[in-house]
Amino acid sequence: MVGTGPESAPPPSMLEKGGTHGGKTAVVVAVLVVIASIAILSLLLAILYYYYIRRRVGRRSDDEESKESKDATLLPAVVGGRTEAQVFTYKQLQMATNEFSPVNVIGHGGFGSVFRGALPDGKLAAIKQLDRGGKQGDHEFRVEVDMLSRLHSPYLLELIGYCADQDHRLLVYEYMHNGNLQEHLYSDGTCGNPPMLDWGTRMRIALDAARGLEYLHEFVDPPIIHRDFKSSNILLDQNFSAKVSDFGLAKIGSDKVGGHVSTRVLGTHGYVAPEYAMTGHLTTKSDVYSYGVVLLELLTGRVPVDMKRPPGEGVLVSWALPRLTDREKLKNMVDPVLHGQYTMKELIQVAAIAAMCVQSEADYRPLITDVVQSLVPLVKHRMCSKVTSTPNFHHHIVTLKSSSIDSGSSG
Ligand SMILES: Nc1ncnc2c1ncn2[C@@H]1O[C@H](COP(=O)(O)OP(=O)(O)OP(=O)(O)O)[C@@H](O)[C@H]1O
Ligand SMILES: [Mg+2]
Image (cartoon, rainbow, N blue to C red; front, side, top):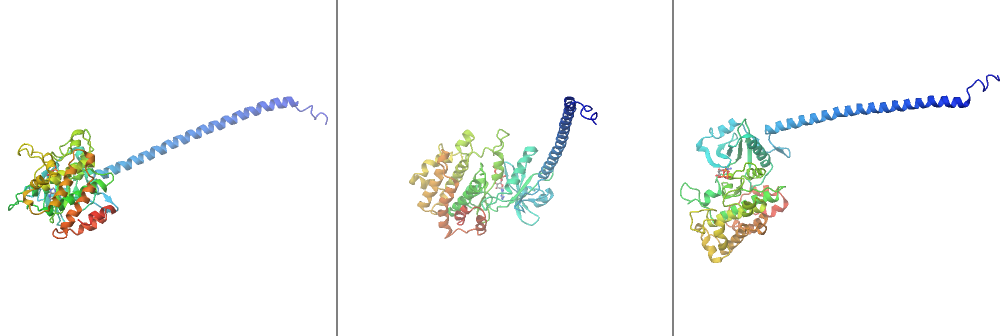
Protein backbone atom coordinates (compact mmCIF):
# COMPACT_ATOMS: atom_id res chain seq x y z
CA MET A 1 0.00 0.00 0.00
CA VAL A 2 2.91 2.06 1.13
CA GLY A 3 4.79 1.06 -2.20
CA THR A 4 1.94 2.17 -4.31
CA GLY A 5 2.07 5.45 -2.57
CA PRO A 6 3.82 8.53 -3.58
CA GLU A 7 7.13 6.70 -4.24
CA SER A 8 5.81 4.91 -7.35
CA ALA A 9 4.40 8.05 -8.76
CA PRO A 10 6.79 10.44 -10.47
CA PRO A 11 8.00 13.21 -8.31
CA PRO A 12 5.87 16.28 -8.47
CA SER A 13 8.72 18.25 -10.02
CA MET A 14 9.12 15.67 -12.76
CA LEU A 15 5.40 15.54 -13.26
CA GLU A 16 5.29 19.28 -13.56
CA LYS A 17 8.25 19.38 -15.94
CA GLY A 18 7.07 16.55 -18.21
CA GLY A 19 3.42 17.79 -18.16
CA THR A 20 4.39 21.38 -18.99
CA HIS A 21 6.43 20.38 -22.03
CA GLY A 22 3.68 18.17 -23.47
CA GLY A 23 1.02 20.78 -22.70
CA LYS A 24 2.98 23.59 -24.31
CA THR A 25 3.49 21.60 -27.50
CA ALA A 26 -0.17 20.84 -27.60
CA VAL A 27 -1.04 24.47 -27.13
CA VAL A 28 1.41 25.52 -29.84
CA VAL A 29 0.02 22.90 -32.20
CA ALA A 30 -3.51 23.96 -31.40
CA VAL A 31 -2.67 27.61 -31.99
CA LEU A 32 -0.96 26.74 -35.26
CA VAL A 33 -3.94 24.69 -36.36
CA VAL A 34 -6.29 27.54 -35.51
CA ILE A 35 -4.12 30.08 -37.33
CA ALA A 36 -3.79 27.81 -40.35
CA SER A 37 -7.54 27.19 -40.38
CA ILE A 38 -8.26 30.87 -40.16
CA ALA A 39 -5.76 31.56 -42.94
CA ILE A 40 -7.24 28.86 -45.18
CA LEU A 41 -10.76 30.03 -44.39
CA SER A 42 -9.82 33.64 -45.14
CA LEU A 43 -8.20 32.58 -48.36
CA LEU A 44 -11.30 30.62 -49.31
CA LEU A 45 -13.51 33.55 -48.42
CA ALA A 46 -11.29 35.89 -50.40
CA ILE A 47 -11.43 33.57 -53.42
CA LEU A 48 -15.19 33.23 -53.09
CA TYR A 49 -15.59 37.00 -52.74
CA TYR A 50 -13.35 37.57 -55.75
CA TYR A 51 -15.50 35.28 -57.89
CA TYR A 52 -18.67 36.85 -56.49
CA ILE A 53 -17.46 40.34 -57.41
CA ARG A 54 -16.33 39.18 -60.82
CA ARG A 55 -19.74 37.72 -61.51
CA ARG A 56 -21.48 40.89 -60.37
CA VAL A 57 -19.26 43.14 -62.46
CA GLY A 58 -19.71 40.82 -65.40
CA ARG A 59 -23.45 40.92 -65.00
CA ARG A 60 -23.44 44.69 -64.67
CA SER A 61 -21.42 45.20 -67.83
CA ASP A 62 -23.76 42.77 -69.59
CA ASP A 63 -26.64 44.94 -68.42
CA GLU A 64 -24.86 48.06 -69.56
CA GLU A 65 -24.11 46.47 -72.87
CA SER A 66 -27.71 45.49 -73.39
CA LYS A 67 -28.78 48.97 -72.27
CA GLU A 68 -26.32 50.47 -74.72
CA SER A 69 -27.58 48.30 -77.50
CA LYS A 70 -31.12 49.30 -76.57
CA ASP A 71 -30.05 52.92 -76.73
CA ALA A 72 -28.38 52.27 -80.02
CA THR A 73 -31.66 51.09 -81.46
CA LEU A 74 -33.17 54.30 -80.13
CA LEU A 75 -36.16 52.95 -78.35
CA PRO A 76 -38.71 55.66 -77.75
CA ALA A 77 -38.04 57.70 -74.67
CA VAL A 78 -40.61 56.92 -72.02
CA VAL A 79 -41.36 59.68 -69.60
CA GLY A 80 -43.81 59.23 -66.80
CA GLY A 81 -44.92 55.95 -68.31
CA ARG A 82 -45.96 57.41 -71.65
CA THR A 83 -44.18 57.13 -74.93
CA GLU A 84 -42.93 60.52 -75.93
CA ALA A 85 -41.60 60.08 -79.42
CA GLN A 86 -42.86 57.81 -82.17
CA VAL A 87 -40.48 55.64 -84.09
CA PHE A 88 -40.82 55.71 -87.86
CA THR A 89 -39.26 53.41 -90.40
CA TYR A 90 -37.40 54.96 -93.28
CA LYS A 91 -39.98 53.46 -95.62
CA GLN A 92 -42.80 55.22 -93.75
CA LEU A 93 -41.05 58.56 -94.11
CA GLN A 94 -40.23 57.84 -97.74
CA MET A 95 -43.92 57.32 -98.34
CA ALA A 96 -44.81 60.38 -96.29
CA THR A 97 -42.63 62.62 -98.43
CA ASN A 98 -43.25 60.93 -101.77
CA GLU A 99 -39.71 59.51 -101.88
CA PHE A 100 -38.31 62.78 -100.51
CA SER A 101 -39.50 64.52 -103.61
CA PRO A 102 -37.96 67.96 -104.25
CA VAL A 103 -41.47 69.42 -104.46
CA ASN A 104 -41.86 68.59 -100.77
CA VAL A 105 -38.73 70.43 -99.70
CA ILE A 106 -39.70 73.29 -97.41
CA GLY A 107 -36.23 74.42 -96.44
CA HIS A 108 -32.57 73.71 -95.96
CA GLY A 109 -30.57 74.37 -92.84
CA GLY A 110 -27.33 73.59 -91.12
CA PHE A 111 -28.42 70.04 -90.38
CA GLY A 112 -29.90 69.07 -93.71
CA SER A 113 -33.06 69.40 -95.76
CA VAL A 114 -36.57 69.72 -94.39
CA PHE A 115 -39.50 68.07 -96.16
CA ARG A 116 -43.22 68.36 -95.78
CA GLY A 117 -44.86 64.98 -95.33
CA ALA A 118 -48.13 63.28 -94.44
CA LEU A 119 -47.63 60.71 -91.68
CA PRO A 120 -49.41 57.32 -91.71
CA ASP A 121 -52.15 58.79 -89.48
CA GLY A 122 -52.71 61.63 -91.97
CA LYS A 123 -51.06 64.27 -89.82
CA LEU A 124 -48.84 66.79 -91.61
CA ALA A 125 -45.24 66.89 -90.44
CA ALA A 126 -41.94 68.58 -91.15
CA ILE A 127 -39.30 65.91 -91.65
CA LYS A 128 -35.69 66.95 -91.16
CA GLN A 129 -33.15 64.69 -92.77
CA LEU A 130 -29.82 64.97 -90.99
CA ASP A 131 -26.96 64.81 -93.42
CA ARG A 132 -24.22 64.37 -90.83
CA GLY A 133 -23.19 60.79 -90.39
CA GLY A 134 -20.64 58.96 -88.26
CA LYS A 135 -20.45 58.32 -84.54
CA GLN A 136 -20.59 61.97 -83.58
CA GLY A 137 -23.65 62.62 -85.73
CA ASP A 138 -25.27 59.54 -84.27
CA HIS A 139 -24.58 60.63 -80.72
CA GLU A 140 -25.98 64.10 -81.37
CA PHE A 141 -29.05 62.60 -82.92
CA ARG A 142 -29.63 60.37 -79.89
CA VAL A 143 -29.23 63.24 -77.46
CA GLU A 144 -31.53 65.36 -79.57
CA VAL A 145 -34.29 62.77 -79.52
CA ASP A 146 -33.81 62.08 -75.84
CA MET A 147 -33.83 65.74 -74.86
CA LEU A 148 -36.65 66.90 -77.13
CA SER A 149 -38.82 64.05 -75.92
CA ARG A 150 -38.65 65.53 -72.46
CA LEU A 151 -39.27 69.18 -73.25
CA HIS A 152 -42.87 70.22 -73.66
CA SER A 153 -44.14 73.72 -74.02
CA PRO A 154 -46.76 75.25 -76.29
CA TYR A 155 -44.04 77.72 -77.25
CA LEU A 156 -41.52 75.14 -78.41
CA LEU A 157 -41.74 73.14 -81.62
CA GLU A 158 -42.87 69.63 -80.83
CA LEU A 159 -40.89 66.58 -81.85
CA ILE A 160 -43.37 63.96 -83.04
CA GLY A 161 -40.83 61.22 -83.57
CA TYR A 162 -37.74 60.07 -85.37
CA CYS A 163 -36.29 57.47 -87.66
CA ALA A 164 -33.00 55.71 -87.01
CA ASP A 165 -33.28 52.98 -89.64
CA GLN A 166 -29.80 51.74 -90.57
CA ASP A 167 -27.79 54.86 -91.49
CA HIS A 168 -30.79 57.13 -91.86
CA ARG A 169 -31.34 59.79 -89.23
CA LEU A 170 -34.52 61.83 -89.49
CA LEU A 171 -36.45 63.99 -87.06
CA VAL A 172 -40.19 64.40 -87.40
CA TYR A 173 -41.64 67.67 -86.11
CA GLU A 174 -45.10 69.13 -85.99
CA TYR A 175 -45.80 71.05 -89.17
CA MET A 176 -46.01 74.82 -88.90
CA HIS A 177 -48.26 76.07 -91.68
CA ASN A 178 -46.88 79.58 -91.88
CA GLY A 179 -43.20 78.67 -92.01
CA ASN A 180 -40.62 80.83 -90.31
CA LEU A 181 -40.88 84.41 -89.07
CA GLN A 182 -38.05 85.64 -91.27
CA GLU A 183 -39.97 84.84 -94.46
CA HIS A 184 -42.83 87.06 -93.31
CA LEU A 185 -40.72 89.95 -92.13
CA TYR A 186 -38.86 90.33 -95.39
CA SER A 187 -41.74 89.55 -97.67
CA ASP A 188 -43.28 92.28 -99.78
CA GLY A 189 -46.64 90.71 -99.08
CA THR A 190 -47.53 90.44 -102.77
CA CYS A 191 -49.51 87.54 -104.19
CA GLY A 192 -47.66 84.22 -103.75
CA ASN A 193 -45.40 85.64 -101.06
CA PRO A 194 -45.98 85.25 -97.33
CA PRO A 195 -48.36 87.88 -95.96
CA MET A 196 -46.82 90.75 -94.02
CA LEU A 197 -47.44 90.82 -90.30
CA ASP A 198 -49.28 93.62 -88.55
CA TRP A 199 -48.18 95.22 -85.28
CA GLY A 200 -50.52 93.16 -83.08
CA THR A 201 -49.38 89.87 -84.62
CA ARG A 202 -45.74 90.89 -84.27
CA MET A 203 -46.21 91.64 -80.58
CA ARG A 204 -47.94 88.31 -80.03
CA ILE A 205 -45.09 86.52 -81.83
CA ALA A 206 -42.58 88.44 -79.68
CA LEU A 207 -44.38 87.26 -76.54
CA ASP A 208 -44.70 83.63 -77.68
CA ALA A 209 -41.01 83.51 -78.59
CA ALA A 210 -40.03 85.05 -75.24
CA ARG A 211 -42.09 82.39 -73.50
CA GLY A 212 -40.32 79.70 -75.49
CA LEU A 213 -36.98 80.97 -74.23
CA GLU A 214 -38.42 81.44 -70.75
CA TYR A 215 -39.32 77.76 -70.69
CA LEU A 216 -35.77 76.78 -71.65
CA HIS A 217 -34.15 79.19 -69.18
CA GLU A 218 -36.48 78.97 -66.23
CA PHE A 219 -38.47 75.76 -66.34
CA VAL A 220 -35.81 73.30 -67.39
CA ASP A 221 -33.21 72.20 -64.92
CA PRO A 222 -30.39 72.72 -65.75
CA PRO A 223 -31.37 75.59 -68.03
CA ILE A 224 -30.97 75.19 -71.74
CA ILE A 225 -29.28 77.95 -73.68
CA HIS A 226 -30.71 78.02 -77.18
CA ARG A 227 -27.60 79.69 -78.64
CA ASP A 228 -29.10 79.97 -82.13
CA PHE A 229 -32.16 82.07 -81.47
CA LYS A 230 -33.11 83.95 -84.65
CA SER A 231 -36.11 84.79 -86.79
CA SER A 232 -35.72 81.71 -89.01
CA ASN A 233 -35.91 79.51 -85.91
CA ILE A 234 -39.26 81.00 -84.90
CA LEU A 235 -41.99 79.07 -86.69
CA LEU A 236 -45.60 80.13 -87.13
CA ASP A 237 -48.69 77.95 -87.11
CA GLN A 238 -51.94 78.62 -88.98
CA ASN A 239 -52.97 81.21 -86.34
CA PHE A 240 -49.57 82.89 -86.45
CA SER A 241 -48.82 81.62 -82.98
CA ALA A 242 -45.07 81.25 -82.68
CA LYS A 243 -42.94 78.35 -81.54
CA VAL A 244 -39.22 78.30 -81.01
CA SER A 245 -37.37 75.58 -82.92
CA ASP A 246 -33.90 74.05 -83.07
CA PHE A 247 -33.20 74.41 -79.36
CA GLY A 248 -32.18 70.77 -79.09
CA LEU A 249 -29.66 70.71 -81.87
CA ALA A 250 -28.19 74.02 -80.75
CA LYS A 251 -27.70 72.80 -77.17
CA ILE A 252 -26.08 69.58 -78.26
CA GLY A 253 -23.51 71.59 -80.13
CA SER A 254 -22.46 73.20 -76.87
CA ASP A 255 -20.93 69.95 -75.63
CA LYS A 256 -18.39 69.91 -78.39
CA VAL A 257 -15.81 72.14 -76.80
CA GLY A 258 -12.78 72.06 -79.04
CA GLY A 259 -14.47 69.54 -81.27
CA HIS A 260 -15.38 70.20 -84.83
CA VAL A 261 -17.40 73.34 -84.63
CA SER A 262 -20.07 74.12 -87.15
CA THR A 263 -21.39 77.60 -87.87
CA ARG A 264 -24.56 76.71 -85.95
CA VAL A 265 -22.60 76.03 -82.81
CA LEU A 266 -21.28 79.55 -82.98
CA GLY A 267 -24.73 80.91 -83.62
CA THR A 268 -25.71 83.00 -86.59
CA HIS A 269 -24.04 86.18 -87.75
CA GLY A 270 -25.84 89.27 -86.48
CA TYR A 271 -27.52 87.49 -83.56
CA VAL A 272 -24.54 86.49 -81.45
CA ALA A 273 -23.96 88.39 -78.19
CA PRO A 274 -20.64 90.29 -78.21
CA GLU A 275 -19.24 88.59 -75.09
CA TYR A 276 -19.99 85.16 -76.53
CA ALA A 277 -18.42 86.10 -79.85
CA MET A 278 -15.30 87.41 -78.13
CA THR A 279 -14.77 85.00 -75.24
CA GLY A 280 -16.96 82.01 -76.00
CA HIS A 281 -18.53 82.56 -72.62
CA LEU A 282 -22.14 81.54 -72.94
CA THR A 283 -25.00 82.31 -70.56
CA THR A 284 -28.76 82.64 -70.83
CA LYS A 285 -28.09 86.37 -71.34
CA SER A 286 -26.57 85.50 -74.73
CA ASP A 287 -30.01 84.25 -75.76
CA VAL A 288 -31.53 87.46 -74.39
CA TYR A 289 -29.25 89.45 -76.71
CA SER A 290 -30.34 87.34 -79.71
CA TYR A 291 -33.92 87.85 -78.62
CA GLY A 292 -33.34 91.61 -78.65
CA VAL A 293 -32.10 91.38 -82.23
CA VAL A 294 -35.29 89.53 -83.24
CA LEU A 295 -37.36 92.20 -81.48
CA LEU A 296 -35.51 94.82 -83.53
CA GLU A 297 -36.29 92.87 -86.71
CA LEU A 298 -39.98 92.84 -85.73
CA LEU A 299 -39.89 96.55 -85.02
CA THR A 300 -37.91 97.74 -88.02
CA GLY A 301 -38.38 95.06 -90.69
CA ARG A 302 -34.60 95.16 -91.19
CA VAL A 303 -32.27 92.16 -91.33
CA PRO A 304 -29.59 91.94 -88.60
CA VAL A 305 -26.71 92.46 -91.02
CA ASP A 306 -27.09 94.09 -94.42
CA MET A 307 -23.86 95.42 -95.85
CA LYS A 308 -25.68 96.83 -98.87
CA ARG A 309 -27.09 99.57 -96.68
CA PRO A 310 -25.35 102.96 -96.40
CA PRO A 311 -22.37 103.19 -94.03
CA GLY A 312 -23.43 103.02 -90.38
CA GLU A 313 -26.70 101.23 -91.19
CA GLY A 314 -25.36 97.78 -92.04
CA VAL A 315 -25.46 96.32 -88.52
CA LEU A 316 -28.96 96.55 -87.12
CA VAL A 317 -28.00 96.77 -83.43
CA SER A 318 -25.44 99.56 -83.93
CA TRP A 319 -27.85 101.50 -86.12
CA ALA A 320 -30.86 101.00 -83.85
CA LEU A 321 -29.39 101.52 -80.36
CA PRO A 322 -29.03 105.33 -80.42
CA ARG A 323 -32.45 105.68 -82.08
CA LEU A 324 -34.31 103.51 -79.56
CA THR A 325 -34.01 106.15 -76.85
CA ASP A 326 -34.76 109.15 -79.05
CA ARG A 327 -38.48 109.78 -79.44
CA GLU A 328 -38.27 111.44 -82.86
CA LYS A 329 -35.76 109.03 -84.36
CA LEU A 330 -37.72 106.12 -82.92
CA LYS A 331 -40.78 106.87 -85.04
CA ASN A 332 -38.65 106.91 -88.17
CA MET A 333 -36.99 103.59 -87.53
CA VAL A 334 -40.21 101.57 -87.41
CA ASP A 335 -41.07 99.31 -90.34
CA PRO A 336 -43.10 101.63 -92.61
CA VAL A 337 -45.80 98.97 -93.14
CA LEU A 338 -46.72 99.30 -89.46
CA HIS A 339 -47.52 102.98 -89.50
CA GLY A 340 -50.80 103.83 -87.84
CA GLN A 341 -51.04 100.46 -86.06
CA TYR A 342 -49.44 101.31 -82.71
CA THR A 343 -49.57 104.03 -80.12
CA MET A 344 -46.49 106.04 -79.18
CA LYS A 345 -46.68 104.55 -75.70
CA GLU A 346 -46.57 101.01 -77.08
CA LEU A 347 -43.69 101.88 -79.37
CA ILE A 348 -41.66 103.39 -76.52
CA GLN A 349 -42.26 100.34 -74.36
CA VAL A 350 -41.16 97.87 -77.02
CA ALA A 351 -38.15 100.02 -77.89
CA ALA A 352 -37.12 100.08 -74.22
CA ILE A 353 -37.27 96.28 -74.01
CA ALA A 354 -35.23 95.89 -77.20
CA ALA A 355 -32.64 98.43 -76.02
CA MET A 356 -32.13 96.57 -72.74
CA CYS A 357 -31.82 93.18 -74.44
CA VAL A 358 -29.10 94.25 -76.87
CA GLN A 359 -26.90 96.02 -74.33
CA SER A 360 -23.29 95.04 -74.76
CA GLU A 361 -22.94 94.40 -71.01
CA ALA A 362 -24.56 91.00 -70.42
CA ASP A 363 -25.29 91.64 -66.73
CA TYR A 364 -27.44 94.66 -67.55
CA ARG A 365 -29.69 92.71 -69.90
CA PRO A 366 -32.99 91.62 -68.39
CA LEU A 367 -33.92 88.02 -67.68
CA ILE A 368 -36.20 86.64 -70.34
CA THR A 369 -38.88 86.31 -67.64
CA ASP A 370 -38.75 90.09 -67.22
CA VAL A 371 -39.19 90.48 -70.97
CA VAL A 372 -42.26 88.24 -70.85
CA GLN A 373 -43.72 90.29 -68.00
CA SER A 374 -43.13 93.53 -69.89
CA LEU A 375 -44.72 92.27 -73.10
CA VAL A 376 -47.81 90.73 -71.50
CA PRO A 377 -49.69 94.03 -71.01
CA LEU A 378 -48.89 95.09 -74.57
CA VAL A 379 -50.41 91.93 -75.99
CA LYS A 380 -53.17 91.64 -73.41
CA HIS A 381 -54.32 95.10 -74.32
CA ARG A 382 -54.70 94.10 -77.95
CA MET A 383 -56.07 90.63 -77.23
CA CYS A 384 -59.28 92.21 -75.90
CA SER A 385 -60.04 93.76 -79.24
CA LYS A 386 -58.44 91.95 -82.11
CA VAL A 387 -55.93 89.15 -81.92
CA THR A 388 -57.34 85.66 -81.96
CA SER A 389 -56.18 83.50 -79.08
CA THR A 390 -55.18 79.86 -79.13
CA PRO A 391 -57.32 78.31 -76.39
CA ASN A 392 -55.53 74.95 -76.19
CA PHE A 393 -52.39 76.73 -74.97
CA HIS A 394 -53.99 77.63 -71.67
CA HIS A 395 -54.19 74.02 -70.62
CA HIS A 396 -50.57 73.25 -71.52
CA ILE A 397 -49.23 76.22 -69.61
CA VAL A 398 -50.89 75.13 -66.40
CA THR A 399 -48.97 71.87 -66.56
CA LEU A 400 -45.62 73.68 -66.46
CA LYS A 401 -44.71 75.62 -63.35
CA SER A 402 -47.07 77.58 -61.19
CA SER A 403 -45.08 80.78 -61.65
CA SER A 404 -45.68 80.62 -65.40
CA ILE A 405 -49.43 80.41 -65.09
CA ASP A 406 -50.03 84.06 -64.51
CA SER A 407 -47.95 85.23 -67.42
CA GLY A 408 -49.06 82.34 -69.58
CA SER A 409 -52.77 82.77 -69.13
CA SER A 410 -52.90 85.83 -71.24
CA GLY A 411 -51.30 84.25 -74.28
N1 LIG B 1 -41.70 72.28 -88.32
C1 LIG B 1 -41.62 72.99 -89.41
N2 LIG B 1 -42.75 73.39 -90.06
C2 LIG B 1 -42.68 74.13 -91.17
N3 LIG B 1 -41.52 74.53 -91.73
C3 LIG B 1 -40.37 74.19 -91.15
C4 LIG B 1 -40.36 73.39 -89.97
N4 LIG B 1 -39.07 73.19 -89.60
C5 LIG B 1 -38.33 73.84 -90.51
N5 LIG B 1 -39.09 74.43 -91.44
C6 LIG B 1 -38.64 75.23 -92.59
O1 LIG B 1 -37.42 74.71 -93.04
C7 LIG B 1 -36.43 75.73 -93.00
C8 LIG B 1 -35.09 75.10 -92.67
O2 LIG B 1 -35.10 74.74 -91.34
P1 LIG B 1 -33.77 74.45 -90.54
O3 LIG B 1 -34.08 74.49 -89.11
O4 LIG B 1 -33.17 73.19 -91.06
O5 LIG B 1 -32.81 75.60 -90.98
P2 LIG B 1 -32.79 77.14 -90.57
O6 LIG B 1 -33.62 77.36 -89.36
O7 LIG B 1 -33.17 77.94 -91.76
O8 LIG B 1 -31.29 77.37 -90.27
P3 LIG B 1 -30.46 76.68 -89.13
O9 LIG B 1 -29.99 75.37 -89.64
O10 LIG B 1 -29.36 77.61 -88.87
O11 LIG B 1 -31.42 76.51 -87.97
C9 LIG B 1 -36.91 76.72 -91.96
O12 LIG B 1 -36.38 77.97 -92.16
C10 LIG B 1 -38.40 76.66 -92.15
O13 LIG B 1 -38.79 77.54 -93.16
MG1 LIG C 1 -33.83 76.13 -87.87
